[in-house]
Image (tube, rainbow over all chains, first blue to last red; front, side, top):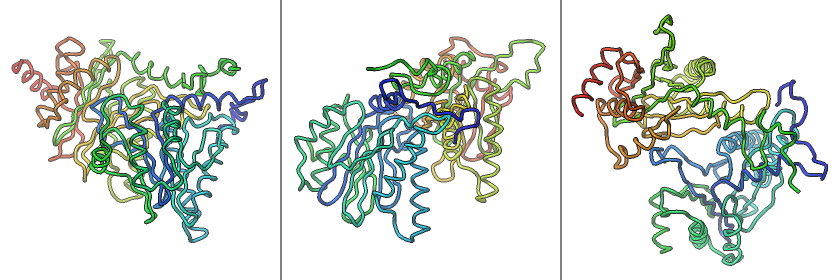
Length: 235
Length: 246
């Protein structure tokens, strides 16, 4: 990628040894809507705020949480258009893996390849880094997993994590409430409470999105009605 | 220590500013406004209508050649607000893409797929330095086989959403405020109501009453899902209906 005119990298080292474009990308992520993920003993839940620019927007046309494979889902904080690009590339990589090995791609492999793409865009000519951080939730033979991938291309496995505007409050909240034995249902409630902490306005099934994967290893996004049920339980 | 913006190029090409913003994309939005035109789109129960101003700056110009409404296929229309040259490039590529889709897949390109394609192309321009973002906001309309009437808006940043009603251009924010009030209780507009809401929104926001030759109107209806540009006579009928209603 990158045209011949721009065969030099736009992300270069500053005298202090920093890659400032990546730092700016992280700032872009930090001003995005809050999202979080929690790994339970028997599954993973990811959730995000879904604040749309106007009531005129048809919220059914927007889905922030996406499926990469039947057993891996992803959510983001940051720039939506950049997220779409990464989703497409990841889906293609998952399919190519399957064509070659005739088995479903393990979560760690998919995360690694997605992260590699993000790293390429910090080093290739004529391109800028992605302005998104991803939370990848999956369930494969190694059990439930949650990974966070940053614009730099670095990724870590997390028990629970948050990104976006309200990251510090959300992480503090999660640290208090997380236990290693937490069950998926409880994790969903905790996710909702964490989002509620920094939420401006009235939380409802229409302005948050929740995706879960349990022992059935099928990732799915909850319907607004299901979210309302959980919200009622949390009250 | 936070250094400056890498030599100040963050204003010239699409790299991040220290605040994590893309100035070139923001300037592209400003370019859309600087064209001086406002456009409105409204989705009804079984139809979609888009309206835009038709400003012909010179009497010697051939008015029929001045347009912002473009059919992409027989069933899909695109209203481009902003820089006309960028609009023509986009339309030309969209037409190619839609025809290719029909050829390869054997069925007509749906509205949201076209909107997705336009938005993905716009995203590339925000990430690769060799091309600047287009100074165009595109409203795509059509009747979807499964979900009915659809109105999508794609912007220079690569965002796209489905809308119940929306606006673009110079008086975008005023128009959206007006439309939010109208659409607050989730009304179900008939075809006539859809067209009249769109036209009266434009009139209200620009505070002038139009003649039929000063606006362009494009529609798609469920019973006849072909994208059509209304003739001056048809526009006149709607304008009369609006003034009688008020």
